Image (tube, rainbow, N blue to C red; front, side, top):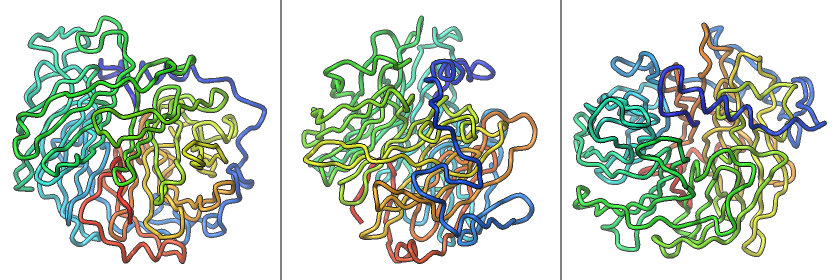
Length: 474
């Protein structure tokens, strides 16, 4: 998701401009619920939904086992839940007001460990050892958690700032702010890439821009930025590179420059960048000087290349399109099945070749913002299975082992959010140590269980940490 830096009502300006720039619908329209809208029919398990408490709908192989509502001071106004990270028995949930640490040693009974108030958009979170990183994509009056939103020109005084905040999480019950790194156009999302030296961590910063009259995001902007973090001395973190990953220019129809999200696969020395108008495959053997292997476009179907996911053996990449920036109802018969969807690319001879599209197949109302958003692999060797958030479309579990015929095997969703909420639903849905964790924008943290022959082998896989933008072989 991407908003302007004005906050409040103005936060939807960029979403609406994204809607205005969306490509016209093609002749292929999204099918009604009784027919398939994806590249293959919905699995039988997902065609017979059952009700849970009159509010949750699931396939018969999925159930909600726990929900942790947002808590004060992170539960009001635009204090929306955002991204997730995991470490041991802990889940870290980003929130526009800060972040929350949960004890998930018993996934069916999560416990709040601490809540940190540190406001900004979006506060996407990752963890590495005793360090936690937050992405700040909003001009603040300074880098501290006591800062205020400053507006693009820094009109509230202070020294306009946005970028990466760093915390010490040695004591999960009392995280401590350590330092920060200012980055051009802030940090919408970020990706951790371990260095060859274990004492050095690199962070690839994705920061869409430019913004007219901005104090921190001037034109031109076609950059990713690389921050080097000495893990034993995080206060010395600094920018060490701003590589140009668009040697042939960025997508001509893009309404912004830069990237939305980058997924790295350090073991394979690969990264996939989802950018405004393009998908880029990178060689990251040299962490500070990534090399472009290929740049692809899909002008007919993709508007905002939002995120990327490799399969386990790095022979495929899933790119998602966040049509409308997350503020539109695109899971309906008015929107083609190839828009606001996922594109499946095989990597053949080091090059990306598009195979098929996948879109959550259930019809949603015109009141429900719904589009492809954050997801992760479910760790089943020999299979390519993913769980993915779709905002008010809920959570979809789907199999893309056959790149040409992806199919849904399970789902979880709520009905339309009550009231006038334009933005709601699942922001991120990730599989971690036997359960799906969904960060619901308004409803808090959901813990979901899937029991299915295809996914059951994943229950025996144990991870010691998980940051979805930094993939590891399972």
